Length: 174
Image (tube, rainbow, N blue to C red):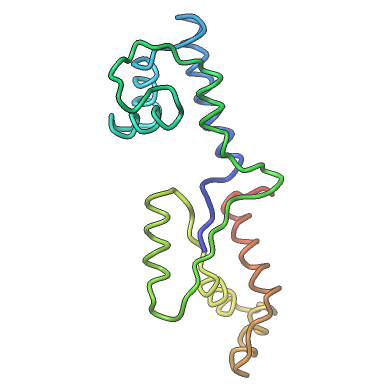
């Protein structure tokens, strides 16, 4: 399972950081930046390369695919609205992708690629169950151990609880 892209608190901090930088530029230059000005800010703040910035600007509608004109104005509010438009509502929770399959089929490899490409976090239900099972004096760990010894499935409530605890430990506030 992968959870992403980041916790609401971290996302709010990034948004606030970007807003402060954009507002400073707005105050100095007026209500809108040029595309080239926006690219400079993104290079500084996000450490993005030119090709990544170009794709982002095209995707946001600030720049057309075939244009090289970087003097067009970009409304800061519109651009930031686009950046954060796909942000999950913190009351709903993060996006979660479940990767399922049999032993050795590549779930971990696939999750690693999702983490690298999209910035999600990887949580393995199996790893969480094993960690709890090995935790000294854990009643839940003892129950997990007994279910495994009996050849039975661990109750889903336990697995879901461990996943939720780990998500909260990693910063999800929902």
